[in-house]
Length: 372
Image 1: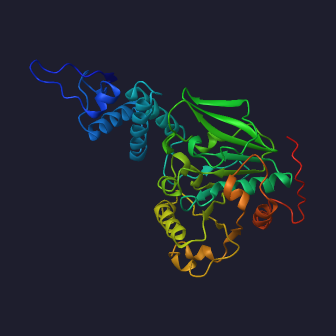
Image 2 (image 1 turned 90 degrees about the vertical axis):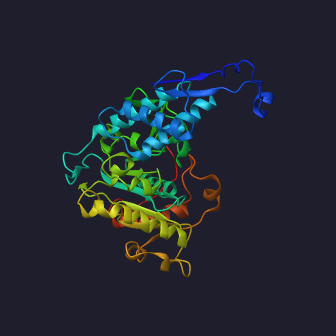
Image 3 (image 1 turned 45 degrees about the vertical axis):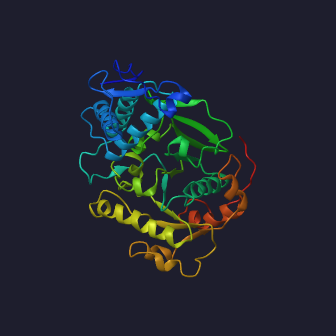
């Protein structure tokens, strides 16, 4: 397959030129050529998408690539080419397909119901967004800050595409330590106070869910490691679709059991979204391949507003009775998560949960001094 820009040829003899508005203002229009035969451009968006999808699957080789990943790769490869950052969209799509296949092949289970080992992670707390913009990154950060102020050694995992991460500004400076996973994908380790923050880096235009490495690849040589908090990212709906690979891998059934959190806003639409996330995860839980969220966390309120709980479906409704509430904070609402510790009122909201899980003592002193 080839992919290149091709200048339009001259009009046939005797045929008057028909300059378009684009031609008259910007000069000759270039056409994107992607196909198995050089010089044969796609005539429709569907053909272009199909050609880039073929390139993605070819790059993945024998490892199946999720349809959602193929679609996202095709779109991002085309955008990057038009923007001039990636001159060969087919090659870019193939590299992205190869990266997704490499990450998927790292941790494919011998059987769907084989439990994974979470040994080495300490207490594992994956944070799953129940709806768009629910505040999962804020919840993950509040947990990390409360734990590190209580003297716990904490690993914070940011599994999102860096361009769409709520933790993009969570470290004061980018750490110098990296771990290469493929030629195009690596992990970077930075400090957030005393907590170690791990996130993805890539030379590719986007990191699709299928490119997210499986949990064991994120584990650094850190001893002792008391707690690992994971901001799953990638939209809870997508992550819950497949706990066998990608960001959903943090929801795999394993030992010792993890404690996933489901994060929502105090609104009826958010609860309806969260119900569908649980519905998507339900067959995996029934098959013994995944675990349900352990706790519901509500961001932006101190209690349920009137009439909101009624929107919860049969899967979510039992969790509303024991929900943990994170109050609204104007500064966090405007700035999001920064390198500064979150306000005390947010940390105090999650501390009882950590105390109940015996992750911090009842009388944990929290000095806000940052040694790093």
